[in-house]
Length: 407
Image 1 (tube, one colour):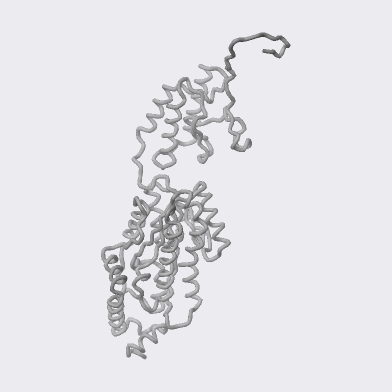
Image 2 (cartoon, one colour):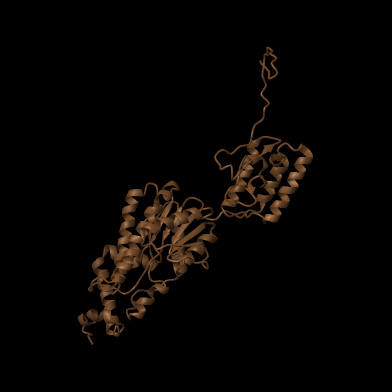
């Protein structure tokens, strides 16, 4: 063996006691210049960056494996929303006290990394003692379109209650919504790409669940040529959902995630005077079926079919005198939200979901006895026309004429 001073010697054994350097070469040095000097709460959490925790960045008095396992449990509880970090002041006080104790015991050789294994494991056990039980969606990353609307707000609030991280997309950003909402015109493909990228960024780099709820309703009789309203409904309700899903699909596939399409009972049981809405929702269901055949081995695909829920989406129809309140029976909003949550948390993604017992009966009738379903709808509409329900609606002139109720 040749030494640096030029001396040489013959040796029988070499014991390597050189220690190691703490490095994180996969991170930008500007972000973490020296990991050994990084102040970490519980040797896991940076004080000012909740997106960059560490596991295993420590020097223990005992085996590293029990420490790493304890840190993993601590991090999992935090990521799944079952454990909250203390305030920055409390974390800083804890880190400062630990640093002082480490210097008293070990001196200045990497004092921020030093761990007394027994004390540390007891401390983490105390931290985890009060951890809440895991919720069904704990830690799941959920992207919701139409998040600023009635449905979207309710979905965002429920998903958050169940432990999910939720980000919304809507035409305009909405600071008052229960979840962060990024502004995005879903009928513009370029903006959809940017919107999904922003949603993924806010969710921490991925998506586990996509809920396509953005929608538009309005009067559109099938006998009239397609108006701008027809194009708007088809563009948002069907093509917009297609575009968002395609943009998010690579992330969903990596996560073995779920896609939920909020269609409508009108997709299987169409009603007159609202052709654009029914056609767009039936096309949306057909798109979901096709997507299931292509991506169903890696991504769960579910279509939910609610009936009418009282929300501003029906305002334009009422203003045009074409309200279908007496034709379609309203149902509670929270029932639809619960159906969506059940679809997302099911062990296997269900194919089609009706939101009420009546809905299941209507869907079965529409699929297995379509002629009977048409007859029931026609009789109901005839009764509404006879009662003068559409008397002041110019768009219903053809319907009234054919029922002998022309002005």
